[in-house]
Length: 281
Image 1: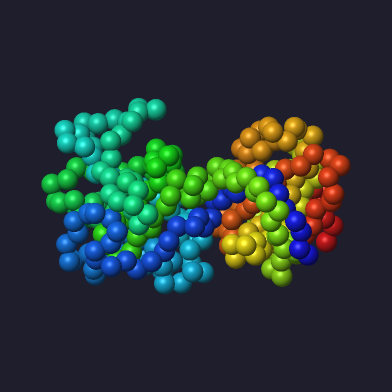
Image 2: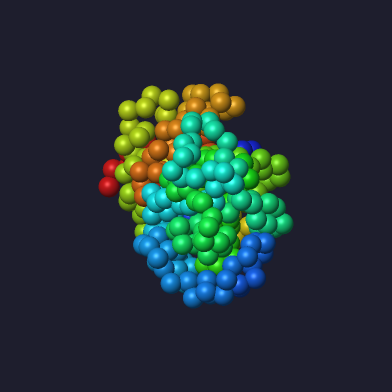
């Protein structure tokens, strides 16, 4: 069914962000020196193996991104700092090496292994391993370039990193936009179960539906989570975001991002799979 849609569209994602998976040329958009040996790109750990597979097979991308968020990534340390003598305190600022992304913006360079840092920046470079989620939180305002100057890398804008972290990507739809909603042929059982558990005993959420959405204007697909809450519309998503974000995270890799819309009753009933009250099979 096709529906007109306007207002706020929130996107929360713990699966595939719209980063570009591409086998890059040696002279990538990143202004980083990389030796010819990087053209071979022999995977040096499980994350790199998954990155190569995700680049070649889109079906493997959710698995890679799920592993990514549970891995350590590596950054070059500024002169005078070393991993043996430096400790990052909560809220501390870390000066990172910057490269130029495909869109011309300067973003931090991050890497999937210690060897990638050495390949890109030289063997004498000091580096630091940081949990991916913590690192993405540090660079969320700018975006990031993973493995710049290598045949396999990823570039995220700030908005895409926010989605990867499960933060709301708030888009104000100022003109009437068509979205096609329907029940999926293959139900996302893990997502349904996770949302059902999270919403079941939360009095703030009155009703909820999950549908498969197609946005014709952008040729995008997403899961469409339609929530009814008594919380005022202005504050609704911000208050519910931790609950919804955690439920999406616990669902594991997702085929599509999750768009979330929160309305107050008595808005019309949603479409697709009823999450609350739970739909009886």
